[in-house]
Amino acid sequence: MGPLSGLRILDLATLIAGPLSSTLLADLGAEVLKIELPSGSDSLRTLPPFKDGVPLWWKVTNRNKRGITLDVRTAEGREIFLDLVARHDVLVENFRTGTMDKWGLDAATLRAVNPKLTVLRVTGFGQTGPDKSRPGFARMFEALSGYTYISGPEDRPPSYNGYPIGDAVAGLFGALGILSALLQLRSGPGDQAQGQDIDLSATEAMFRLLEFLPIEYDQLGVVRERNGNTSAYAAPVNTYKTLDDKWVSLHASAQPMWERLAALMGKPQLIASAEFSDNENRVKNRHKLNAMVEEWVRGMPYDALSQALTRADIAHCPIYSIADIFKDPQVVARESIIQIEDRSLGPVKMQGVVPRFEKTPGAVRATGPNLGQDNTEVYEALGIDAARMDALRKSGVI
Image 1 (cartoon, rainbow, N blue to C red):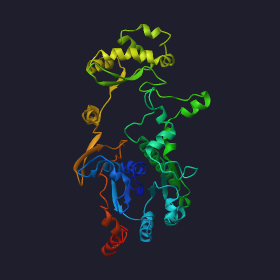
Image 2 (cartoon, rainbow, N blue to C red):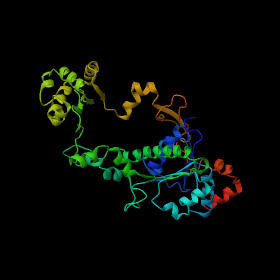
Image 3 (cartoon, one colour):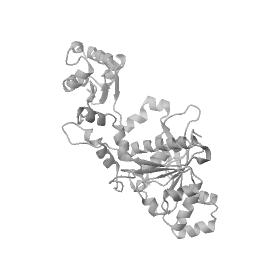
Image 4 (cartoon, rainbow, N blue to C red):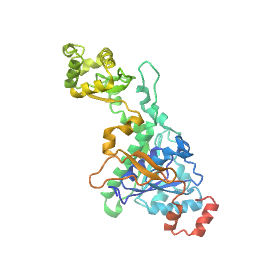
């Protein structure tokens, strides 16, 4: 059942960051109820890729959740929602600051029905400050955090990668925040323990990930620039193309590893050279050093190169496409890609649960729910009979 079995979460969030927070906990056993508007207007349902009109992204980001439709902006919808709040431990939402207050679902109202409720509020910029009401997307979080500025070749404009990493990072911090709040709640003074709101700024989450950039600027006045695939703090480190046009990532900055690489390249004299004697000097002269490594790598096909590097115990790996990942022996051995049945598509494959628990492992139990697929079961459990459900459907509440 997973280490979080018994934890109950309401997911009112849309798109990626907020839903990912609850999905990560659902993977570990939490029971998550996904609430959507009856129109099914969550933008994640409209993002490619699709198969036969079915949104594939949705199936992963909202896996392990039951799904209902409910318009919490209506009086009847608000009443039903508060009934659900009373039965759950956590609420996840990602509306602009103050939106739920306008719907009559402010913090005081929520905690009047559930004093111990933990609420994760995910926004682009936080619940306070001059930007609190701005709309935001991952590209903005990445740009404003400084991440985009240091990404890309040094002689080219700042670059984005092909995935909204800012949303994923916020999702991870959201899951961490929920678990931290629940631990505090458990250790609180008995019945006096109160739930709390978690103010998660996706931009701050990305900024936190960059670790030493602020202290480097504060103490040294250094504005870190783009370095392409090299590193500004370790060398030799780069991506190189082999004789058979395969890409390899090589990292040999540790001193013993560097010395083994220099010997393997047939250039042991570099070890004693002032330019390359230690990592600090290798970083200063990284372009010259990388040119030599690049020439050496280019003279061998990947398999021969990998065998030589492996014998010398030098860190390296191929740069995988998703097709390569599916075939990797380590991925296959650990069953890092699992297969699960989907209501619309049949068997589908996706990542397994991370991390793995020895005694209480999590599991992927279901793909992201179809719109309103669990309405009947959930609303019957609330005591809503078929006649009232029909009336709620006709009025657009569910």
